[in-house]
Structures are given as C-alpha cells and as structure tokens.
Length: 242
Image 1 (spheres, helix red, strand yellow):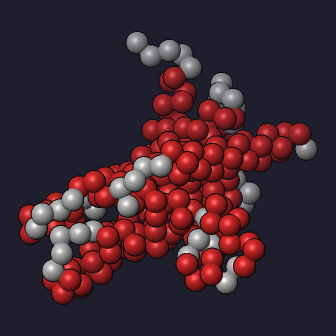
Image 2 (cartoon, one colour):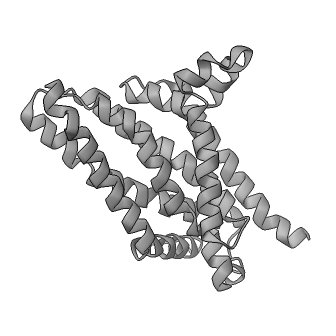
C-alpha cells in the first residue's frame, strides 16, 4: 500500500517520464545517439579485429554530451513556458522532492537510452571473446556521467523559460567540464592541471570505464549530482523569498 506522500512523488515522476517519451526532440537525439555510436564504432571494428569496446567508450562521453542537454532542457523551462510550474509547486511536497522526482525520471530515460545501445556489446560478444568487466564499468560510468550532467542541466533549466537557452547553456558547461580533463588540456594547464583533473567529469568517467570502480569516482559523481540538485531547489525557493 502506497503512503500518502508517495502518490504525489510518483505523479511528478510519471508526468516527467511521460513527457520525455512524448518529446520529439528527446527521441531525435536518442536515435542519433544510438545510430551514430554504432556506425562510428563499426567503422574501425573489423580493421582492429578485436572484440573490445574501448573505442566506443572513448567516444561515449561525446555522445552523452549532446544527448543529456536535450533530455534536461525541458525539465523546468517548459513548465515555466506553459505556466504549469506554479501549479506543480503547490503540490503537498517540498521542493526537494519535486526536484528529485524530476531528476529520477530523467535518469530513467537516460538509462533506457543506454539499454537500447546494449545491442552493440551483445553483437560484439557474438563475434569474439568480449571482456564484460570493462563493458559493465563503461555503462555504469556513462550513466553516472550522464546523471551528473542531468543534474547540471536541470538546474540551468530552472533559471530560464527557454528550452534552447537551457540546451545551449548546459552543452557549454558540460563541454567545459569534459575538456578540462583531456590530456591536451592537462598538459598545457601547468600548476592548474591537478585541480582540473579532480574537477573534470571526463577523468572520473575514464577511471570507471576501464572496469576499475574507484569509490572516489563514484563519490565525485554523487557529490556533483547532489550539489546541482541542491542549487535547483535553491533556485525554486528563491522565487518565494523574492
């Protein structure tokens, strides 16, 4: 039996998840993510003649970089544009529960997109002896990496009523966090290289994608998510303080 508090939370979660599945933009980016990833991977698969997804996981952050802003951009911007944000915030729920429900709905949609891409490792495993350890680590890393950007994008979406602005701002912020950890950036950053290494989403994803799940990388992503969900709650509460 569901408790009274769970019904509004599930209602927000279901509403947000349905909105993603009914969103043409999210579908377009998801299909592009799946097709492009598979096409680019198999371009070199038969040349390398190795049953490994290392190349795919090297490319995956760049695909997620465009997919996640498309998922997150409508979270609050669309609510504001339609004038339903005020109605949503009158539900018998604190702001943090509404923010969490929306985040988990978006994270579920991202997980579904990643599940559909599992056709790639299953196909490769039929062609050779695939090591599933790095594959599992890669998908876990990709989901945490994407969830971090979802929290970032959800906060940015709460600051505007324009989905395109939310998409572009999230894309630019996510891009900066990604390239901060690239070898080229770190090699030219001098004394800042250590700081950039610790702050970049790419370096923490790379560790998990190798199949080595370091607790520090998991804590980084969970802290990143918690920070931007907190900022999302703060941005909503600040409207009332004004």
